[in-house]
Length: 225
Length: 298
Image 1 (tube, rainbow over the protein chains, first blue to last red):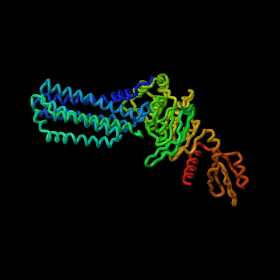
Image 2 (cartoon, helix red, strand yellow):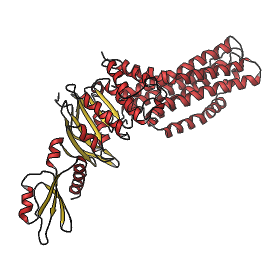
Image 3 (cartoon, each protein chain N blue to C red):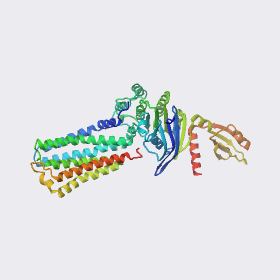
Image 4 (spheres, each protein chain N blue to C red):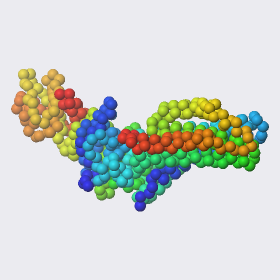
């Protein structure tokens, strides 16, 4: 009986990268613990560290899981298995995105708990928080897509540099062009304005387009190794 | 459906600085073919094409009856592939790799895997990063051989190994052939290794197959004739002789289609035949490559 090689590759990636996932969750949880202390300084420090823990994983995971496979020449070993380059690409994308979603969802849940149950931040911060939480997710998808399609450490690093320096620019543009965002974030109630839904929709579209383009480009490759 | 383990017909592949020209290659089931070529000859590209890792620009590739690259997934279930640049996961143990392969291949032979661990002197508990180069190569081969594949494709597997490790690996590859119907394609620029285990030899140079035939026929057909040429005697151009090098009164003629009458033909022309020598595969390889390059230039 022939086994599902894609599934085995996904499980293999989980075994190889689980330490980083656990580390990200621990770092994010520690940042939230700082935030729970209360006061403006812990709130700022905790929020920044929380964001940094996600960015750390968004950068490191694609490099470890995708670029290193080529750099450390383990790709030949994987490609000797009964799998095509298109299926390898799909398995790699599923495993990398899946691995990232574990800490992302866990920390999103933990952040909501901090806001809704512990009231460390006002409920008005939830829509903005969700928008900001999507930044590292989008950045991660862009780095992952570049690493997988370009197959080079150089392009992966370039994608990281561009993505990491764009977070604050995007945030600045959003706040300066959509005043309702910062008008409501310190309020006691979460305000879901049309602008918030538009931004979330655009973020979702970027994620879907990036992942779709990655799969498409990967399936068209004629020279894989 | 083809009867060959590997069949390449008119395969071409172009890169900016390298072309693979019209490759025709056939490997009969149950045989070992040595693919010999200098560095950059196109051995690895040919192997990557037949593994489906690189798509040919034109031509047909069939491996174990599967058209490549389309049928690569089905074909790879029965192919064991190892290359010189293949690495295992440094942070994991050899045992983890064995377990990983075992979970994929139903054909995994546990008893044989244990036997190979002993024969190769490997420890399943050891992490790959602690293995020497020779041990890593042996570990890669263990993972390939214990799957019991119908076809082994090995791209320079003995490069960088000490003589003992090379001997162990070649012995194991020869042992694999005891089982009916298994075939091996073995690329190397080490002619000694290829001569030791191959039934068939294929020479490749600058992206072209320059010769492909049974090893014994090769060794039988190629000869070196040492001649003494008195002044005033001109050596005739004889069929089957691909080159003559002269140094004063002495000359060396290389024949790639030696016939017993060749020495007589030289004697008749006035030259004296001092010796007719067999050539090693390395000497045949070098002479063949040089002859092919001269032909391409001409």
